[in-house]
Image 1 (cartoon, rainbow, N blue to C red):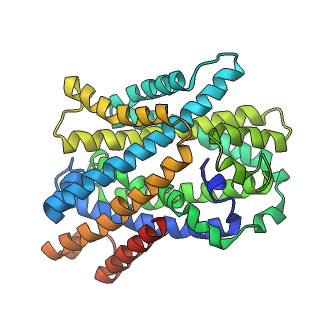
Image 2: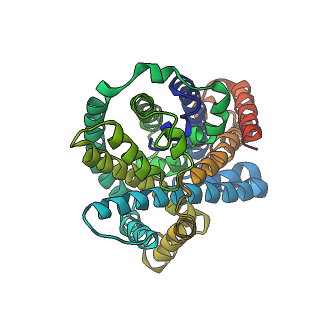
Image 3: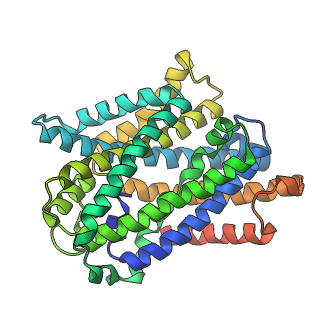
Amino acid sequence: MLALPISTAASGFVHSMLFLIICWFIMTIGALLVLEVNLRLPPGSNMITMAKSTLGLPGQIIAWISYLLLLYSLLSAYIAGGSDIFQAILLNINIKLPNSATSVIYTGLFSLVVYSGIQAVDYVNRGLMFGKLGIYILLVLIISPHVNLKSLHQGSLQTITASFMILIASFGFASIVPSLREYLHSDRRALRKVIVLGSLIPLTCYIIWNAIIMGVIPREGDNGLIALNINGHTTSGLILALSKEIHNEWIDGFFSFFSSICMVTAFLGVSIGLFDFLADGLKLRKSGVQGKSTLALTFLPPLTIALFYPGIYLHALSYAGICCVILLLLLPAVMSWQARRANPDQNLILVPGGYVLLTGMILTGLYLLTLAI
């Protein structure tokens, strides 16, 4: 949500809205295909097990590499962005810490929630999401009267390809589908509803958010959205740019709080997906010494990246988008193809359209990868 208006600023609101809807549709089908394959296997199976059972060793290797790159890229982005906001909040109360210290504190604090398990993440995220929704509504109400409608018609369609991967990464939720399947006890109906309705909520919020941010903060200029795209402090820079355009005593506090929750909820969701993935792939327990080893493998690599490249937020999201295409679009389509050939039972198929749809998904994924390259 924080990256979208910055990364799509050159293309403008109308074009970004159109491609947000397209990306949502594609990635939701991918998530349903992940669920379809996962439900054919025992509970607790993650992407590694799914790829191995349907595609053998080559699929297992591709899943390992692309999954680790995806989730490590996302976590690197959220640690970099979250610690940037955390540092800005500390500065407001006259506490000055270096980037490295804020990154370590931020990661260490929320890794404890992940170690407590998906139920703890769920309860913490529920509380944060209620707060996030309330602040989001307040921000929309405060900012929307200042929107310049003419600004929403600016932009060039040709520049949208530069932000494709961040648009795709905005709907990378399929990585936690195996964890959700276990949590919801393989309830097909509930899982399908969670995926479809759950993904429509952020799509709607993304579109409204892009409208109010692009309608208030100018595209051009030193403090414009395009300039923020190359700023090492993207998230805190967005807060400053908005406060300069809207002179409201509440805006700084609300937006800082909102940005913080955005980072934390994303961080926790991705973290639990990676934690479960590593535990499944390495056959490790999620508690005790093995659990602590899994936790270290989950957080130390992205923390190291964020420490050496503190301004990596937008770049890491772009890399994550490429991995999303491979892992959550191409791989599910191919796995589903193989699974349906092995067992064509119609009761196991969640996504209609047959092999025509699967072919379309594969070709779409290959096209997106070509654009990224």
